[in-house]
Amino acid sequence: TVDPIHVLITSGACFRLNCVGVADVLEFESRKSLQDMMAEDLVKLARVALSLGTRAVITSKNMDEALLIVKANYSNELCNAVLALLSGKFSAAGMFAVLADRVADELETALACADS
Image (cartoon, rainbow, N blue to C red; front, top):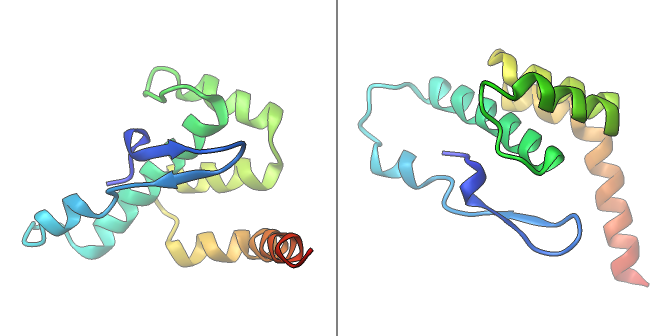
């Protein structure tokens, strides 16, 4: 499962996710379908994004406040992506489609830095 306790913030804006597939492997015979598990992970990914953006643990009590903080400090693209993920009606493919341009720009910048 995707959870803030599995996030290691390294340097600056870099972070690493750890042990995110362990529960899925251990419970491979669960009654949940793959689609249900993916939808649940995407909602949890949105909570992790909110936690990283606000530097606080997100609960149902402080979710609205966290969303306001993210809206005030980050792009509309990120806010819309987080809201879509929180809705539970967003697929991984939909997420990639929304963020494809941003990912391509970041990859290009990282490769340019590595080449210098």
